[in-house]
Image (cartoon, rainbow, N blue to C red; front, side, top):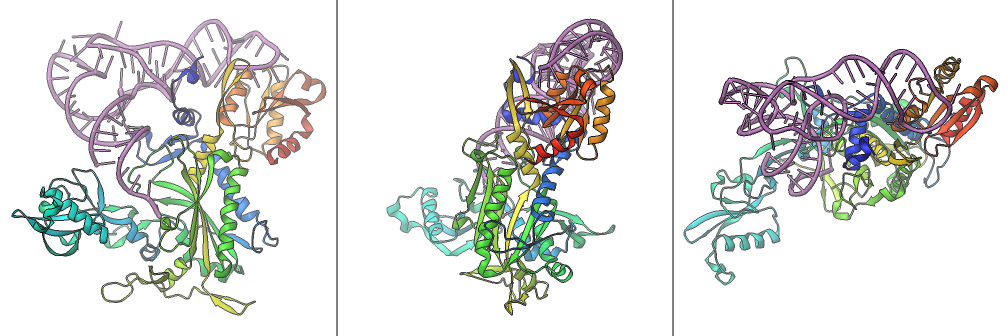
Length: 540
RNA sequence: GCGGGUGUAGCUCAGUGGUAGAGCGUCACGUUGCCAACGUGAAUGUCGUGGGUUCGAGCCCCAUCACCCGCUCCA
């Protein structure tokens, strides 16, 4: 035993090592010491990721049959694509809700090491034993009041029966009404004054527009591609003759200032999304939601993720966003997670009419079961919408409605990572260990490698001709260096599904062997049929 | 952001104050006739980065960056 097999490393460490060694994934700016949360794809990685994106685009968009009713679908539907700018009008993020959600002031507690949203800490002044303190809790409701009482008793070292000694002063206040924190008892602190100054957390990446731009020219790099689709909803309808139900797909980069980038590429600050916004009539939207949820789950299974490690999880009611009537995550049991834990690959959300209405009327918020325009202090919309009519008139039913939206939103980098994790295998072959990436042929960087068995007797010439003939059809790789066994193993690590070898018999009868990466089985086939055979095998 | 750990060749690592190392990998030539063979030769190091202590630092000290683990966060 030698090499990486003997190493006492976790599977994930070995995969990260292989990714670098073979050129799948590098850390960004590595020669300068790296940059937290950013990653580069090497020569093999770029092919893998591109193949995954291409498979998605082909399966969801260009390969979609607009005329037939797919199994599980309520009706036929159309699919079109879009490619939007990364920087959009700042108002987009206000109406989408990202600005409020991503733009928090937080306070940190030195004692408990907890971090709270500045506007979500509440408390009350209380006096006892000649001391006046502000008892803070992270809960504004009835429970918070009780909690504050318990905390106050504990702080003043009083028994429950002496609760009358606590002299409460005024109503429950938000922490942002308090100027001086020295008399504040943090929600999980035992001492006073442990809360630090409120600090701004910009979860969206800020940028500046214009060479002379100042703070007032601030814009944001998009935290999701979806908003570009909503903003072009009317453009697409007016220009492409699509009719509801239809979907708009987009693949592109998004940016989020993750607080803790972790776990290789899983949580990155720059990442690529593959998103669909599917527009449908409100009545049928629950059925479309189920269709997309099941279809997207099946997509990962079809490309090779194992059922044991892939899970479709419906969100609980209290986990749903304020506008969502249903959300499911497709999750994968990544090896860097604890046993039984899963990480999100894709979320499928039923977003109702929140997005189109917000971009039309102004940012909405939930009021009971209804969505209403959120108002600012002066009774005007807190964030003004575009004012454009984004409703849809159905010619067939003569009905006007605002489309409901189903959003399957997938992470291209997370999918790439999941496929790599799934593919990584260490195996024994004739007493020797090998590392093999059992990638689905559709996403493998190279579809086949072409070898002369030895570098003489005209074998390289024949192999090179095969290489040139196959190259227009597939990404193939030529290698004539060293022992053929080594070349096979190299391709195993790259995930190449087939190796074609020119040998002595080729010189006699124009046949070659084709070796299967996973079974190691070799079949002898005529050179003339190679392209067709590889094609057929990749599809199966 | 906090606590702990790590950082030396492409990869995995050894090197406890005195000449920069190993295995694997890579490249060339020869040999080899189907699964990481063999021989010969070769290339490859800001010892993460910056400061300090010392006659002398990969090693000690400080700072910083990155990665890993645990908290925290996760639209």
